[in-house]
Length: 67
Image (cartoon, rainbow, N blue to C red; front, top):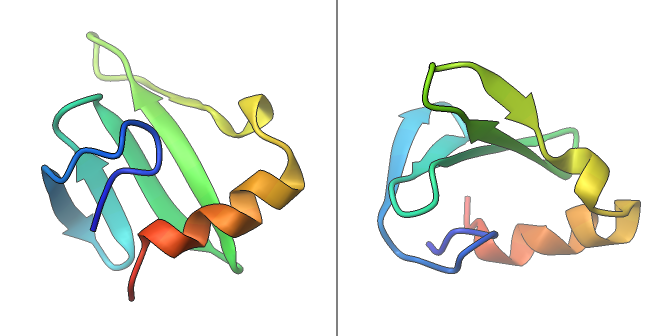
């Protein structure tokens, strides 16, 4: 599996269908058939990145997640 943001392979599983990229510090999961992306800041808070992508991109990003 590769990260949908940086395409790096250093992905860890942190929950059911919930993953973390150690390279770009992005958490991502599949929810209701769409990819949900979060950025982890240095203080540990998370911020959604979904507003940076349109609906079609979030649906097509599932090609990176082989569940």
